[in-house]
Amino acid sequence: MSEKTASTAEAPDTVAATGTVGNFLWNLVESDLASGKHKGVVTRFPPEPNGYLHIGHAKAIYINFGIAKEFGGRCHLRFDDTNPVKEEQEYIDSIQRDVRWLGYDWGQHLYYASDYFEQLYTWAEHLISTGKAYIDDQSADDIRNNRGTLTAPGKNSPFRDRSAEENLDLFRRMRKGEFPNGTRVLRAKIDMASGNINLRDPVIYRILHAHHPRTGDAWCIYPNYDFAHGQSDSIEHVTHSLCSLEFEDHKPLYEWLLANMPVPSFPKQTEFARLNITYTILSKRHLTQFVRDKHVRGWDDPRMPTIAGLRRRGVPPEALLDFVKRAGVSRANAVVEIAMFDAAVREYLNKSASRYMAVLRPLKVVIENYPEGAGEELEAVNNPEDPAAGSRKVPFSRELYIEQDDFMENPPKKFFRLSPGMEVRLRYAYFITCREAVKDAAGNVIELRCTYDPATKGGNAPDGRKVKATMHWVSAAHAVPAEVRLYNPLFLRPDPGADGDPVKDLNPDSLEIIEGKLEPALKDAKVGETVQFERLGYFCRDTDSGLIFNRTVGLRDAYAKAQ
Ligand code: ATP
Ligand code: MG
Image (tube, rainbow, N blue to C red; front, side, top):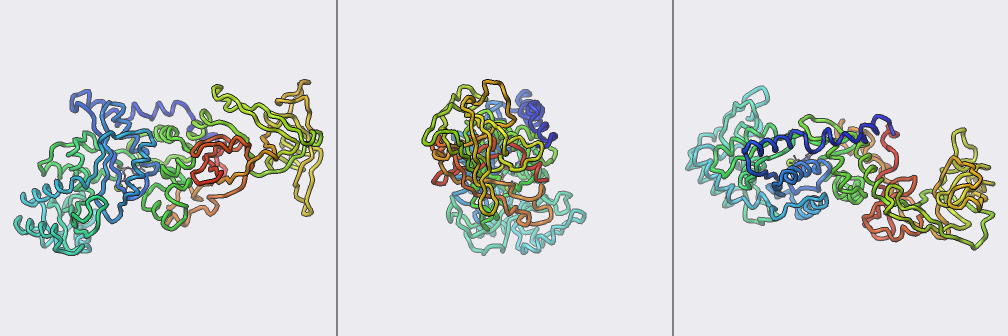
């Protein structure tokens, strides 16, 4: 592990410095409550149900639900379901499951922007009647071309000065379904010369003859995000509308819309920086593509940065939230090292996970002076970090497995594990000495002949002699075979997609499947339980049937090595 990464990632004061209390959003809410501007705080988490949630959303969830919790307010879960073409019930269900898994609860405050379609429509008519919105018959291309650029103002649409009566009539006929998709839109009438392109008569309603997961075929015109979001906040009496920085340029439009309609309240938008992580893509568009084109096995593939993927990989929700807190909440865009995420997971699991022994690349060991047919049960500690976790019995016998790379026939100077003539400790068991390496015809070592010292039971020599290595092992006769899925970084570079399509940067070796030999107690691991395989890392029993484990995270920084 690189020194630098480890120390920044694991420094205990990082949480206090950038975590919950003390960041600018918490301070803002605290001062709004102290000044009496608001009596209570109401926030909302507003995902669009067009994909599964990812780690970036965990940050937005932490901020919105975390603030509500901290200040005794409430946080709504609101689905921004204004684009029926891309939205599905499966996503609605997964989002609710994931927010709950993170430990948050919206109580009875579950809302859908689609619940407000009738109200939004009424407000759109209000804008039209007051001369602040018009129906534009230009093609989508013409609208785009006439919008101008960052340096040149836009051009007024030839339809901009239609009368309110004509606009109202056309809008009602749009709703009735008289016109095909793309033939007309409703635009707010603001300022085609505005320095902010979002204010150049933005489109607020479009014709879309599409079935909606909730409203079915009731509508064939749909408000867009901008026209739904602020008004939904207002209807729900949200006090603080907290969103990521890409909405900063939309804020003047958010405020213009609220100011020009008879809305019940005036929520205030405040922006924070999105979470970005090295070796990770946090964009639903690309994640959807990986699933659709089968680059991964599904939304909950443990290589995915989705909350469902991380859960399946064995990441505990506490560790995920701890990482989000450590990454900090600010307005400065930054990229966080993935090593910091792994460190947070490792740190949490180090305290909570039970230890077991498992051999992933087995090499047979025969203890020549251990009686054939004999066996015994040795006491093993379940978690040295947690005495309350107790101990268990591990079977020992004449034939064992150790890791292939714990043996070297011709070891370099600093190799202290097993080699001919070398003595090592088998964890919780005995000292053993390697007498001979047996090879196959091709010269590969296939078995070690060893002897053990019966006086060293439990792992200590009564004469006080020391060994430099302690190795894990499993008894061959008792071992249970299991499929072990080893995950490597999904991308080969820290900034996937920087040269265009991130698919080009996918790591072809991101998944390696092997058969390991596990100590028998692991047969009873619960699905979703994360344990430590001693000296190897943390592993979680997979949801697929059979005995299958996913590597959650290794014990060392995999990324430092990769660079
Ligand atoms: P994506 O870009 O992945 O498609 P999105 O922003 O379109 O994400 P939404 O469903 O609209 O996805 O997101 C819901 C909320 O989550 C929004 O308020 C958004 O600001 C926030 N959010 C999304 N990605 C991140 C991120 N990487 N960091 C912090 N907040 C995020
Ligand atoms: Mg979005």
